[in-house]
Length: 303
Image (cartoon, rainbow, N blue to C red):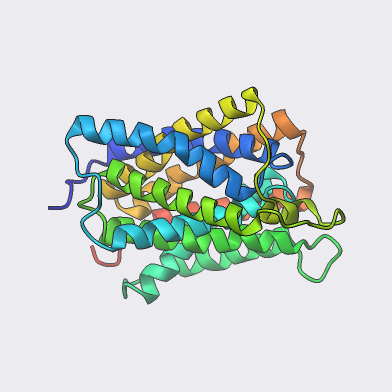
């Protein structure tokens, strides 16, 4: 049986989850010069998975999901974070964050095309506004354009697809069970990436983003092991928290509060990296945020 909706609790859990997620993503950007994305996937989840297993065992919940959709969802989220993390060495954290948060708009389009849900003029206006915001940020055809911005856009598509699956196909699953499947997938993908790249010599002129994708295992200091342990605990909490929230409230209800990630990411970008977006980037951020809010405030055509 699907879990009963509880929007108030879902919103609270989601806000806590995205705040923790922004801090963790800032740490990953901070250490992106030291580790590859495969390294992060493997070591972080080796710490996060035991936390989830202990909680799941204490709750008496099943360790494995009941359907193959649990694993499809996990693969989509791994692809999401692979694309997002690959952009972090190149893009400002605040820019990558606001581009990936086109996902409420993408979710609306996916719901209309895949789930055949009706959309209103509010939804159409929001999609147009969000698209304009993306164009303002990436500025195609100008010297300011960076192909790396397409990575968080791809991440947004994968994330939206995963959240639709969470609501429609994985709603009856325990959120910690979903977390176990996700971290198991992270471990498998991370290990495969490290094994594939083991012993591969890379030219020194590769940019930071390419190195982050193509570097194999790197020795770790004690403090770096501690950071990975912290990342593991945080990821165990926020991945399970997001799953819990989307099981217990409609996506359009949560989408506005999902934007709580953006001020947290902007704050950590400023504090840790001194990032100060230019005027046009700020305009694009505002347009995308307004588009997301417009999506969530649109009247329900099925009501």
